Image (cartoon, rainbow, N blue to C red; front, side):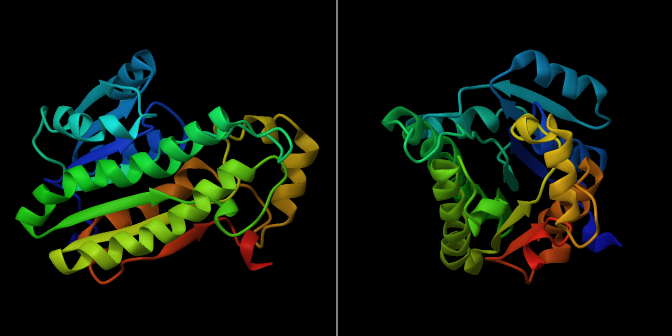
Length: 249
């Protein structure tokens, strides 16, 4: 099982203060990677680091401005060195309907969900190229391919993530850097709180999957570790839906 090891690797996980980002950051640290968790909320990051076994560091930073990506990458490299693994898990969903979308809401959604993942990766790629090994893991969504009410800007950004992932793979895989994405189904996170607060709606979503339930944090760990490890050396440019078969029906 050594092919699934991330021991000795340096990872950066954005959105590590909660939800799926936190679960992935913990999984990588507990499997031997040195992990820098990045998010806005310092208290939540400190709590994550305190409860996680392994070597961790935290960086409280505003991830909404792609102009700061290069400087942010330099700060991320301070604790352990330049990352081998970048997990872009930070995101926002304003849940504005098409008639309600504002320019400000559109801009922050596209910046945080799409622009920052690219420019942060771009800033980290030179160090990955120097090692001839790197992993970029983006977070797609059910809305990468499906349209949901109140998700126009979010869906546009996540549709973009699918193509961005393929374009990253085309650009950098020849240098030993793979780029893939996970497309989570319905998981209980802060972004999906409005969904899970409605028990009937949550049950309806679960019933639409092939397995008959919504996701748990444990469900995201295996696919994430696979994409971050040597086991996925020959897998790049892919979007793996981790949705219990929601999109298969």
